[in-house]
Length: 160
Length: 392
Image 1 (spheres, each protein chain N blue to C red):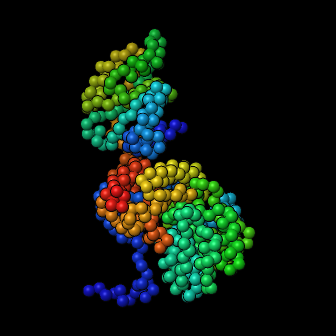
Image 2 (image 1 turned 90 degrees about the vertical axis):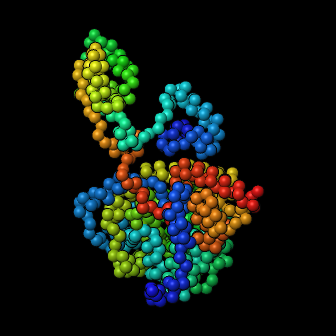
Image 3 (image 1 turned 90 degrees about the horizontal axis):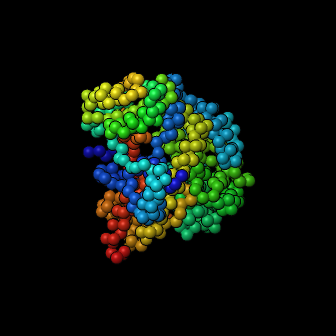
C-alpha cells in the first residue's frame, strides 16, 4: 500500500508537514501524493473523528433500513442515488438480507429524523417501508475504542 | 522517626537505586511531557491473547500450577524454541516458566553463584544485571561495548575482561538499551571462549523477535553450547504482554533443577491466567507479532534519521525498540542532557549511564510510541539544542 495512505489510515492526527518528515519526503511530495490519491478517486476526503459523546449532545444519529420496490422505478441505483443526495444522509449502502438499503442519518433532534423519514423518504417512489433505529451510545467508532478509562492509565512514563 | 533502614542488609543498603526511578518520579508529575522513556510496547496485548486470559478466568482456571508451569505451556515453549531458535528442550525437565525473564535470570544467578564468583556481562545493558549479581554476593565484571561496533560484544574485549573466578557470562541480544546484536561469527567466537573457560552462558533473548536486520542467532544453537547455556525468553516484548509477567528458561536439566528449587520456594508458580494467555500467544500470535515488528521498524527508521539530522549521531539499532544517540556534541553529560531536556522541553529520555558506565555520552530513546510523539519530541529536542552554547 502507498506509504502516505498507510499512515493516514493508522489514524494518528498528522499534518502533511509531519507526514513528510516521517516518510522523509517533504511536505510538497506528500501534497502531491494526496492529490494523486484524490485524482484516482481513492481518497475521497479527510474528516476529523470526534468522540461520539461530544457529538451526541449536539446531534442525533439513526440508521434506517429501507425496503424498495424496483418495478417501474429507477431500480436500486436510481433510488439509492436519490436518497444519497439528502444532506441528512451520512452514508447509504445497498445490503443483502431482509431489507435493501441501509442509510445512516444525522439531525439536530429526533423530530427532524422523524420528519425526514415520513416527509422525504416515504414519499420517494419505490420506497416500500422503513425501519428507523436511533443510536444510543457508542463504544467504538472508526477503529477508536471509546472507554471511560484509558487502558494504559497506570503505565509508568519511564521504565527500564 | 523511621530508622528501620538499620535492619537492611549491608549489600542491599549499598546497592544503588535504578537511575530510571528518579526520572520516573519527575516525569510522572509533569503534564504534557513527551516520554521516550517507556521500556515496553505501546501496543495493547493482541485481543485473541487477552481473550485466552478471559477464558481462563471464566472457566475458573485460577489455581496454582506445577512449579515448572503447566505442561501444555512447556510443550508449546519447547516447540516454539525448537522451531525459531534451533535447540530442543524436554518439556518435562528442561523448561521452567517464570514471572518474566527478570525472575528467570535472578533464579539462574542465585542457583549457580557462590559468594565471590564473578559474572561477565556486556555494557550498556539492562538495569538489573549488575544488581542481581551483587545480591548473590558475587562480583559483576562489565565488558564495554562501543557504538563504532554497533554495541555488539567484541570477543577480544570479552577475552580481555575475563579473570579467574568468572563463572557465568550474561548475554542480551538484541540489547536493551542499544539495539546491538551479535552475528553468527561473533557468537561462534564467544562460544569458543565460553567452552575454553568453562563458562555458563545466560542468554537473555527477550527482544529476539524484534530483530530488524539479518536473522537472530541464539548462542544456544551453536555446537557445544546447549549444555552450557540457559536460554531466557518471555512474552513481554514480542507479544506486548509486559503486565502478564511471564517468561521462561530453557536449559540443561541440572541447572533448571537448581533454579526450580529457588522458584518453588520463592514464587511457587507463574500466574495460571498468564500461562493460559502465553499458550495462545505461542500458538496463534505470530501474525500480530510480525505486524508490531513492522511498525517498530518504520518508527525506528524515522527516529534514527531525526537524531542524525539533529546532529546527535545515532547508529541504526538492529533490534529491540530503542535508539541510543550520542549526545556528546552538546557539551553535556548524559544525566545533564536528560535532565535539562526534561526541564526545558518536557521530553523524557533515559540517560545512558542508567545502563552502566559504558552508556556515558548517550541517551536512550524508546520508539515504542506514536509517530506523533516521536515527531513532537524531535521538534522539542531541536528547540532545546538551539539553546545550548556548545551548539551555537
